Image 1 (tube, helix red, strand yellow):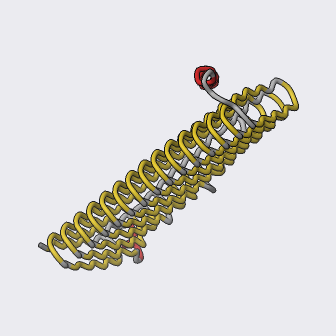
Image 2 (cartoon, rainbow, N blue to C red):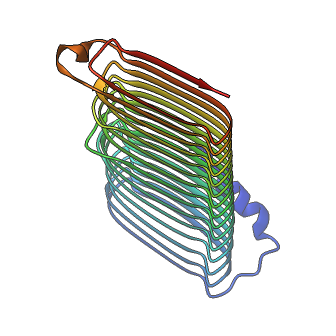
Image 3 (spheres, one colour):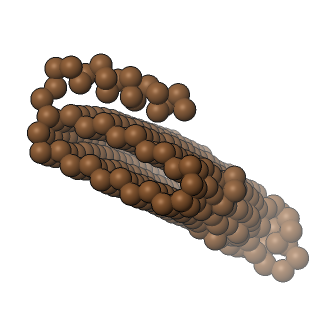
Length: 357
């Protein structure tokens, strides 16, 4: 195991000048062909490893003060690698099933990482890297082929990921101060999440209970918020927000909906709610612009483009009889200050375009 060898080599390198005291290590093994490697240097570090059944492998390296590691492995081919450097880092890894793999690297102070995995055969995998001060990451996986990568740099960033069933994937990257990302994937198949946040006090919340859903969030700046809720089948949502106090909400209730949101500036607000096979695009630049799109039917298309200050756009598209099978199209384009546009479409085959400058 390359990662394991690298950790042990690193431990030997810094051990020569380290002063150790009051460290505690406890390893409990029952079964066949279990392997555990532990290295601690510093003061008041604590380590506990529990391995049962067969073919478990764990490596832990701790440097600093008051670091704590607890690893529980129960199954075949479970592997856990932990490296902690700094002050009071804490890592708890629990693995049950077959082919689990977890790696946690923490540098700095008060970092905390918790990984709980229950998987079978093809296994679940979690990689977490935290550098800075008081970052926190919690990961829970239950199923088959779940995969999580969480990287946090900065101060007081927080990441929470829950995955269940099988073939879910989540990648989270956060840099800055007090960013928060919550991902919950359950009751579905082959869902995918990417969340990238840079800056201060940004928040991202993604919930997927569907099949083959995709959600991508990128936020940079201060106190931006986004939420994505996806149900049913093959929904896709992309949110990009830059600036301060921008907020975006996407809810996709049935299948094959697409939502794209781009907001840049200050305090822009976007809301998209979709039923079935609808497509919505929102682009807002400036300050205090608002967009609200509701698509209750199917095959409808809604586009909103706003630039300036205090513009408002509302689009309502609903199904009605056989017209539901024909596409409604609505486009609102507004530039300037204080413009307002509302479009209501019921039935099918309707088209409306509003331009205001």
